[in-house]
Length: 66
Length: 426
Image (cartoon, rainbow over all chains, first blue to last red; front, side, top):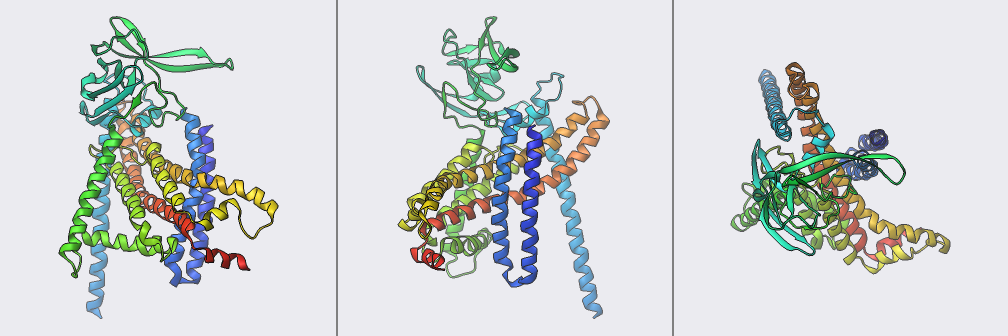
């Protein structure tokens, strides 16, 4: 069960980070001069999304190891 | 025109050459990695032929230990500083424990960790024991379900003394849990953390001396490597997040976080002796780092910051009743997510690499099937090379993310009031 949970958590993060990356690419295409700002904000937001997914993964890990 | 074309061709060729050489180097390095991890887990089995336990091996490698395993039977002893209420302090080096064949003040070494014999009838002082025996015990829990528990016994004069089992509230990830004694030992992780601190001091004293020596001149040596990182972190992280007015106060803290995490991450990627400890993948260490950020943020929080937490201005009173508990909780959740993010990222990376290396043993049936092992080495080697590259990226990204998030939390705490008023005006 832990493995299934970890898989679902990774799925959610994948969708989230994909959306962030895609929109960041759109934004860069529209305004190439703002690439620096967009990049650091993209990494920051991706880290926040990933944080939520990692909660799921840690709980999955504890469920399968404990 | 022709001249330009040949130069272009030369550049492309030399670039391709370099890419090719780099990939060869990486592949060799990762195969070396694989071999070293492999001999590592081989050794853990004490030459006994038994089923390969992938989960156990992975957990043993990412967990902390009281001695540093270098190669085959070579271990580096580390100091143990233990305190048990009732029997006081005990100091010794782990080689005194003789890998589970000697007990000192009821402490024995079990799977690289110091455990304590809870039985009061066991003699204190240095005692030779026959060994540590692992038994699977079946019993029923309060719900009537049967659970299998692995219990370790110290065998002494043909009598078995139960080793106190660390509680599993941490899922076994830390290898610790709650015990009857306090372990202040310099463990593998603490040793590598101190090593990272020494390296940091060495690098930054060199850089600082460089600024004195090359005052007014161009930077030289390692100084020219560190300076762009500093400038980048100042211009992209601290100034935009904390603001022109306050950033100088917090720059040292943010840079210390960044470089400490980066050095620990990179040391964790080295598969042999001075590295290989899972420092930033240890939740106790990320907890302390997150608590530092929590303290720095809240000590520097101004009136405006606390007002926004306890009584958010500009919204109806009934919304405040909902918002205030959420804001108070977010005080804790922010450092908590910092802690989990770093811990889970680094641990997950190590688990994936160890699983790929574990393919060798799964396919090779613990060294019985040579063909399977060869396929495992090739497959595991390529995947490990790929994962090592990703881990290298993650080592930088996670250090950067920890620094930028800490900076943004601090920035929210020291932000001047008029910024907020402008935002609420419309």
